[in-house]
Amino acid sequence: MGHQQLYWSHPRKFGQGSRSCRVCSNRHGLIRKYGLNMCRQCFRQYAKDIGFVKVSCCFNLFFIFRVCIIY
Image 1 (cartoon, rainbow, N blue to C red):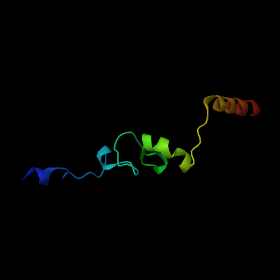
Image 2: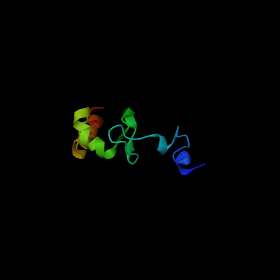
Image 3: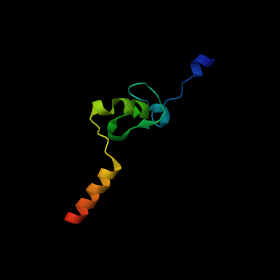
Image 4: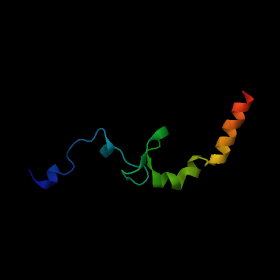
């Protein structure tokens, strides 16, 4: 068996080798949550287009504190 027949011949049905970014086909830094399947670099580039909104830490703490006071 030559090198060309053996190279990438192992089946990749699960694990990191089976998943890649849907935008750039990168296998590193993959975000799979919510079915995104995007690397972190592409996610930062397309986050606004997808509909993600960056929330500041101070706003988060204020919201949690306000909810605790109401209940």
